[in-house]
Amino acid sequence: MAKPVSDAFVFFGATGDLAYKKIFPALQAMIRSGELDMPLIGVSRGGWSLERLRQRARASLEANGGVDEDAFARLCEQLRYIDGDYSDPETFRGLKQALGSASRPIHYLAIPPSMFGTVVQGLAASGCNANARVIVEKPFGRDLASARELNRELHAVFPESSIFRIDHYLGKEAVRNLLYFRFANTFLEPVWNRTYVDSVQITMAEDFGVQGRGAFYEEVGAIRDVVQNHLLQVMSLLAMDAPAGRDPESLRAEKLRLFRATRSLRPQDVVRGQFRGYRDETGVAADSQVETFVALRLYIDTWRWAGVPFYIRAGKKLPITSTQVMVDLKPPPLEIFDGISLADTNYFRFRLSPEVVISTGARVKKAGEGMEGRPVELVARSSRDLGKSPYEQLLGDAIEGDTSLFTRDDSVEEAWRIVEPVLPDSHGNHNTPLTIYEPGSWGPESASELVTDGRHWQDPQPEQSHPC
Image (tube, rainbow, N blue to C red; front, top):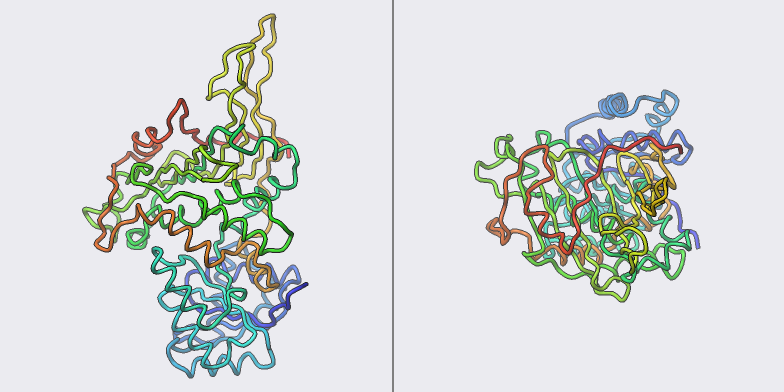
């Protein structure tokens, strides 16, 4: 059964950085495609006016993709503005009035998580939560305890079915393509298990540093920033079983089952690194122990994946910016022709950024009399067309009530449970050592010790052009 579509879009934090970089460009794109014809109500405590917010919206579009004059004119017509403190009931009375006849609003909390409780309580006290949905921006807590507390605050006002936890990574075309490729092709299923898969690697590499956000990064580090959310979500799409139905809850139930089967990390499964020069960044402590690189080894205790190592690494100041998945298959059981090592086996490769590439590695015979082979890569898709922006996709889904690409409360808590044993304690002390690595390298050399039994890290390379 189709869910009712929201009829007003409210975004708290309208004068903030997220609205400037992501929300206004997404709203213009949705208006241009005819997907968004409703009041757009910005709320902030910046002492602004509606005209100033419109100017901010134009500046945002000029800096992030360009202004479509027709769509921008409609955006300005639909835009409203409420200025006030989030703890002041008068702010929410003004919002209630601005909503007018709208009966199914959706509220986007593009604000720090510390303010979520205050805002949802204000929505409840004013009645703005009636028949409403709420979108919350990551991080969904800093650890398991804070994630549970955040969920309690949200559930005090909204049912879980009305809460949309937005992780922009799940809105990427390449990530959705990964899910489609897995379950739309029958040839994968016979080999997508421990009998044929030797190991899985997920690498998220960035060739830049913290880009002036040292103070922010000191509060998170690589594990909290990208592993607990983005990369564990990618792992779940790779490893989950097929959903029992086509509805969003069937998909989310399978992801939860997968997370519950994933072992919590142990210190010996993790290598942390920090690029040389990070401590010179503004806002970074001179003796900082925050990781800018992490490599880890995970195991999933299901019938499908028992014994198969999942290797995940993420880091800054690495040689290339790219996110890539490598699923390595086991070598043939007998060497009928030339010897084939683990380094030469068949594989599936999913390039998630900056291009979308889906390919498989095979071996073919070299020309000549001898029965010797060489590796080739068969490309199923190679494209730079990334479709809708993640925020355009996700905001549209939330307005429609489609929860498929949003994270459920229990999955968030399970993801924190997986990484909790290797997070710093309340005093910032870590139970895993930190190694300094050189910018432009692939992180600490000790990361190679995680990848055992003849395996090695497979570093993403600059993508070659392929016909689409």
